Amino acid sequence: MQHGKHEPTARTTIRGRDGAPRADDGRNRADDGPDRTAAHSRSGQHEHARGRVRARRGRRERHRALRRDVPAVVGLLADDEDFAVMRRYPTFAFDDHPDYLRHAEGLLKALAAQCGHTTVALFDPEEFAHYCRETGLDPDSSASRSRYTAEVAATGPTVAYTGQPLDELVPLLLDRTARHATWQYATSLLDALGSGPDRGPDRGEDAGRSAFRRASGLLAGLLDGAGPGTHHLVCSVPAEEGEQLLAVLHTTRPADAPAVLDSFEAAEFTAVLAVGVALESPGGVVLRTSGPGIPDRLHGWRLHGGRLLALTEAEVFSAYCTDAGTGEPLSPEPGVEYRAGFDVDGEHP
Image (cartoon, rainbow, N blue to C red; front, side, top):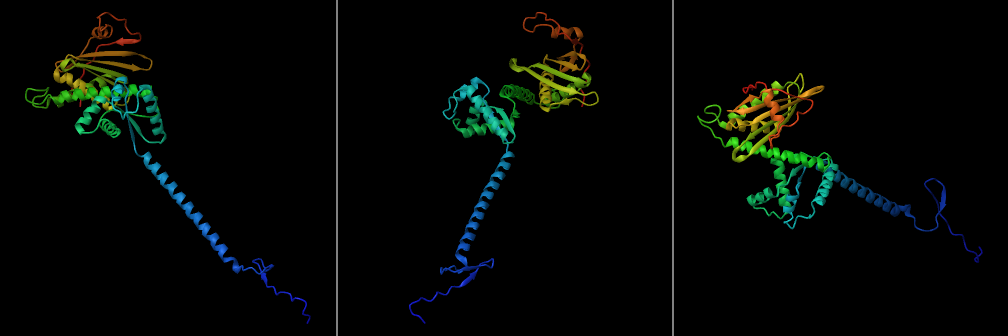
């Protein structure tokens, strides 16, 4: 044995997972346990984070789905004067009506983009102030304005927003609001008539209800006699204290089916006619019928003693061809036939 030389150090051959030998350089590899444990921990954390993201995304989707089922209501200040009244409230953020309308239209478009149903109601500052006094609410509050808008939409006229521009929506909203006011006034007059053996067209029956029933029969008689076509009816009745009630009804009747009526227009028309029947007012009804390929036909009636009496052809011509303000004659409308009214049976069901 030669003492001046070093003996080679013993090395352990370690085979990898593929079976190939690899040398152990003396460092502790201890089957790589700590590294694999850390990798598994990081993988679990990532999966947990992805789960939280999926849960948040699911909550947002459910929230959006629920929001699409909730209707929206917008109270619109359509009139310059009404807008000016609202400027007295410091919490009302606008000072320019056209700018307000632009923002209102933008809001309507945003609500429509969320796929929900949106209705528009007319915001009346005077009615709003009265509502706040009655309910004890502070009128200078967004919460009070939104609560009033919800009440108006629940009980009054509204227009569904379907993407139409405001210059189409506003006239429709104003027309419906005026119709609703006429209907309210007419029904209040009928309600105030009371009952008794000497009141109403039928002895002992509630006068308002009796008049409404009679007016419903008159309307049915008008539609039956008008026949197929597109019909435009106007009823004008002077009411109490110089008020003039005016109702308009549009309807289409196919040749083989009953007339198609808008329920609210029919109720308003019937209520106004019922006022004339109940009060025995000297009002009247005119009917214009149109059809493809034929001239328009004009008929007329006058109210007398709670009945509709047909006008003659000459009376219909005179009514349409005379200026109501000056009494001067007007030229006949081309393509129109002036015809006498027909008999109306007021006892239709």
